[in-house]
Amino acid sequence: MELLPPLPCMNASLRRAARAVSQSYETEFRTARMRATQFTLLEVIKAQEGITQRVLGQLLALDSTTLSRTLAPLEQRGWMRSLPGADRRERRLLLTPSGRRQLDRARPHWERAQEQMRKRLGASAWEQVMAALLRVTRAMQESKRLTAGP
Image (cartoon, rainbow, N blue to C red; front, side, top):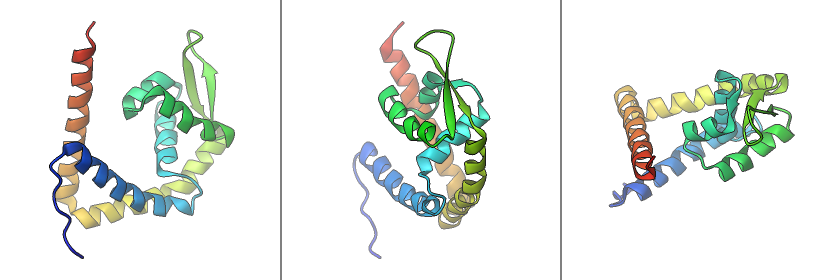
């Protein structure tokens, strides 16, 4: 296999890497009849029961339109439900028993995808990439807050 050339643009490089990683995870999740993005959403909703849609979007760096569009199939499948929050605009998200069972069925697929990535990268590179991605995300979110103003 020929080596991929580096791209001069961080955005293009991150998106290319994300597509390559996503393809690997999606292959694993196909037999669980769900998408990797759905697994992530269910995991976060389970971990932070009652999380608001706004906070979930911030946590995953998703705009509200994309998040709503991604949550809709989860609610349609009965894996999660959305309840009113403190005001009309706020929605609190909860996992259903069916959603918990789906997570349990999908977890081995996620574990295999994770292990494959660790093996391909090696433990040291895995830790470095994970740390770098967190730094990039935090830096961009901080920059966004600073430019948004009070």
